[in-house]
Image (cartoon, rainbow, N blue to C red; front, side):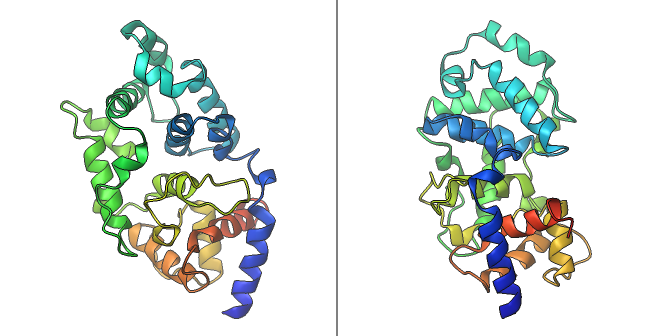
Length: 255
């Protein structure tokens, strides 16, 4: 265990650095400086993060160009005609219906609240294992607006459906972790890094299994919990820092 911890700590140092940003979807919110713009662009970038990373980044650039690269201002002040370009936006199964609902919800929300963090605090219990409640309540809240399209629900994963919730866990890592390395933002203070769940994508899942940290056959919410509980044995205060090590080993080193 100590040897594995030392190995992963070394890989965290290797990959948790600004050079990691360029080819990763987190490069999108790093294009912005205003807190609300970082939150909004990061949210879209995380939700659209499936497929090739280069394609994800290009689609996000396309999306925010439609918002004049000022997403918060756009959400607060756009007119009906300003939405027409989004009818042509599509990334894999995320289409115009989904895009327009996301814009609708975020516009409604930011006209009432200062930070998207508030939407993630509805299920906050303060307990170490609060994330299941946090993500479940967020998904329910996100689709609480009347006539929200049923097809769009698949784009916000929830533990209540046993999903691993990779993209939303990744987004929370970006917003919550603050380690002065210049990668994660650490903008949100009401969720603790110790509560975060490791984003369990294809690469992290594969490396986690190779290292004997995952025993479940399927990849679901309980798998993400199993991996995170193991990582907490290495660092109880900041277990998800090891996402850098596992992802880097999988993508960069083909471990």
